[in-house]
Amino acid sequence: MDMQKPTGEEIKHPENKEGNLNLWQRISGVLWGGPGKTFADIAARPGVTAMVLLLLSVSFLLALAILPKIKEFTLWTIQNEPNAVNMPPEAMSMATTLTVVVTLLGSVLAPLILWLIMAGLLKLYNAFAGEKAPFQTLFAVTVYAYLPVMLGSIIKTALIMTSPAQNFQKISTSLALLLPGDQMDRLYMVLMQVDPFFIWGVVLLAVGSSVVMKVAPVKTGAYVGALWLVYVLGVGLLTPLSPAGI
Image 1 (cartoon, one colour):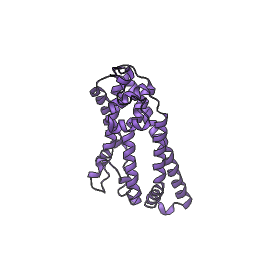
Image 2 (cartoon, helix red, strand yellow):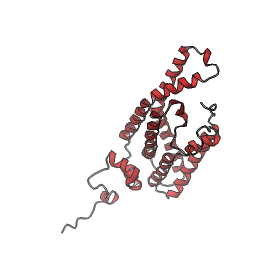
Image 3 (cartoon, helix red, strand yellow):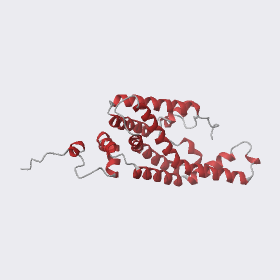
Image 4 (cartoon, one colour):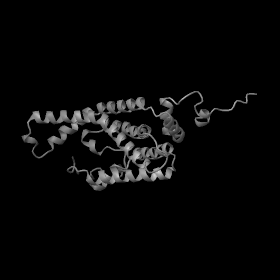
């Protein structure tokens, strides 16, 4: 009878005795197969280049898919401005082109900036709590915790592609859907930030940082939750409101 004892690595990663978790195993593990164990594997091997390239590629493709709707919405918005009659066609074309460029650049830069900021905030917390974790590892946690947000973006993109361009600003997967369709006040802006997919990502961020720093999840959860609340109130209360109907 084989009485061979499991190695330390097998004890550490019992779900993957054949080797390290591959990219798909990490994705599925973070989303539904046991994020705690998966983040432990990520902490041991924080290489994240493939995941970054995958997420940024998907984000760019989603932006490309909705470009026609964005162009249409931009033109519709300009045409509904009080001084639209006096605006030359060249200015409208330039505004549309600028919107396209910003959309495509933002699809790549926005996630990167968000991951770097969140990794920096986790590193700040880590300076005062738990075992010290490298910035690279915390960055990897933020990247994988972004997976639910990307799922929400895919759903939102599908909704945008199948809806009139005039509804572009009102399409969301957030609690703002519970409000009347023509309501665009401060409450609407706050509820726009309360998105189940984003909250899912916040929970994963708390779990992943807890594993990496080796502190209780309730502590990282309180910290990440406070950051999320500040974000919700900041964006909801400081974002300029659009005119009614635009």
